[in-house]
Length: 460
Image 1 (cartoon, one colour):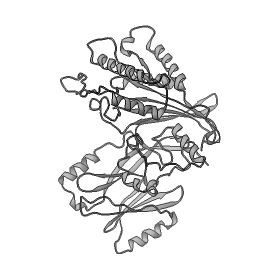
Image 2: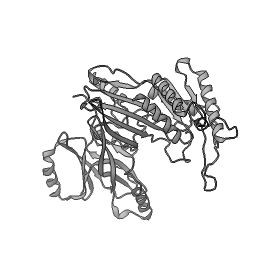
Image 3: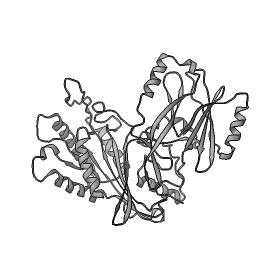
Image 4: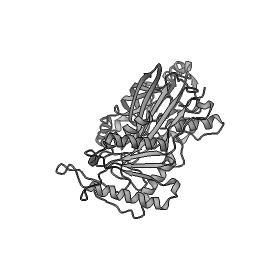
């Protein structure tokens, strides 16, 4: 049965991984419990730390009932077989520090909710499996390996075996409808321009070795970084599920004060796509039943600016390290938004607007000037709709912020709409979202959260 939340050609990754070591090879068994099949990937061990990664086989699938026989044959071979890691539940990809490649495995995960009938999981623990002679590991290599192991991958990293979390419901439905119509779709992870696609697949770089063959696609498990929340509600006898997914972009990512503004490719700091979903609890494979989705985004002011925090000055001044007289990077940013979400493009700027000597006010005016300049060159139908609102100074005046935000949220939803379908692949969606609202303050945190809350509430 076709599924709105998963295209018919979606290649489900394996749900279990068994890793073994022979004399000269690392053997990875990927197990598909749904189809009762497995596949074997052979990775030759390298004595030369500079040798490239080599992957063998891994495309053919075998009946799961043959697995034990296959293992007995390998154990009795002259190469022997030694178990390295059992019951790994995910393969993140590969990583290399100084001396050789490692396999990154998810050892434990937990269920945090679901979308339709697709379970969403979070990472609990990971492990590294060296794909070279471990006796070659020197002090510097061990240092980088320890640094990686100290990363807290158990916080805010999510995946699903049967649903593409990195894409919105509307995008997944579009893929499903094209596939149902017989159109041959591109392989999921192969794109002509990787700088624009897979923005929210955080392990995209680590999965790169699998992209060389389309048959290796079932080894790919996309991981998103952000936030996921799920709850079940009821109203007047109707039970429904509500989920919230926030996806952080892997481009120009970094912590506060370290990543401000944008880069030359138009990618901004703190770029987050937030999608809220509402599903009829009776929905299973989603060929029928109500599904609603709404997407909004946040991101740093798309200009070249930065701040350097110090212990002496906790609120550092805004500096402009690069001149962009033609606004080339800002244009790239909004062109990308238009390509991804369509029109209209609504921009809500929540920075201060009154104090003339304020760094924040100057940044806000630079942003407004850039929007006005671009709009003069755009056709009226696709001009950026800009709305400044000094939230901090307005807090002491009337009407209240809540009343203003409620009206603003209503205007946003009326202009961009939301996605809604009750027929799945059996008919056209009742509504589509066209365009997006982009919200920012200086940090894209507290003030942005307040407005996005009101917009999300208006959709519900």
